[in-house]
Image (cartoon, rainbow, N blue to C red; front, side, top):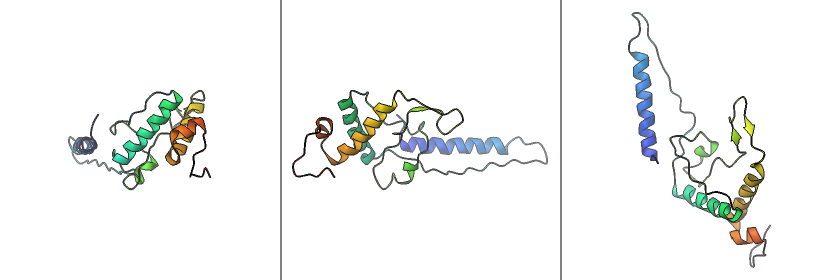
Length: 146
């Protein structure tokens, strides 16, 4: 998997290459410009995010669901979590499964929705209580469920 540093270097190389294409070979008396606006900060992998993903994998195992791995920073999309990722541990991409997100023709895979809902609910619960109690719903002494 590419490192976050590799992602930043690749991004800079792409911008430099695009800039060179736009500024070279213009017909006499013409010019072209390109402007880049980085609206979403990149979300680097962090130890906190890895710990949350590890907890999510525990939930997946408890539900009999497949393991989930962090998406390569080179291919994952933008998420609002990127704004807070330098300050707190976050996961992104836990919403409705489907295709064509935020675009015409977007669809939600309703068959996967029950698993996704259980996964997120148990992840939230498991952050406060041991996962075994979330699955077995056994009372936890000394802790409140409220």
